[in-house]
Image 1 (cartoon, rainbow, N blue to C red):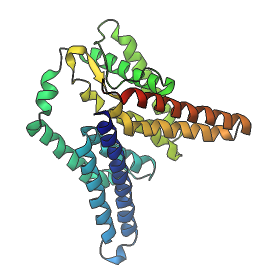
Image 2 (spheres, rainbow, N blue to C red):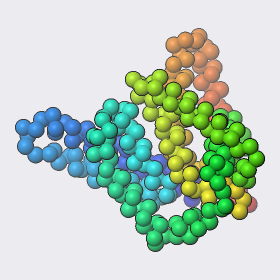
Image 3 (cartoon, one colour):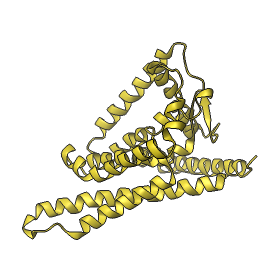
Image 4 (cartoon, one colour):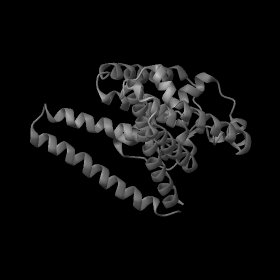
Length: 275
């Protein structure tokens, strides 16, 4: 089962990246045409890019429902990388939003989403939910950066005592993200903090799948989101290359790479046993 899960999510990443590249190229091709309206007709390749993007998005949805966050990824890339206006972004991403909406309604009506999710929502206030969800976010970040305590499913009881402390932590994280995006707004790297947060959107609902044990998270839900963390880490290492000694820089890169390889090997051995 673990091998099947890994294969499915790996294929989802490939399909998502295909859809993202095609979606962005669809916007580029259409804008090129608008700059040369004397051509009289829209270039055929713009429609081909859109069809390819929708096919990639549809394939990703077949792999796992967390792919429903794709229109957010595409919109963020169009805004922060292609520097399009909000109006242009909505225009070029609309077919993907339409597919995402259709998929959600289909799952809600015919594929047990309501029975498996919404009908299981426990008696929890919005403050308790935000506090507990913040704990899920911090657990994921802790596991990512420490490479320790990674499990296939992790749950935590609903936080009912002093939830405002967690709310303050959440607001601090959001504020720091906004500050970072504004600081990097002239750089393509501004996409990565946003990318990570988009990855948590499906978790906002998926965390209710086992309400008896509290809110839950499965790290493989965030495989696509982790691309933002790895890209951000790479950006930090590249920036540090210009400011520290070459030997120190190679040492830091070696530590990171060896740690990731060793941890991956260790957890592969652990999860290869279905028991």
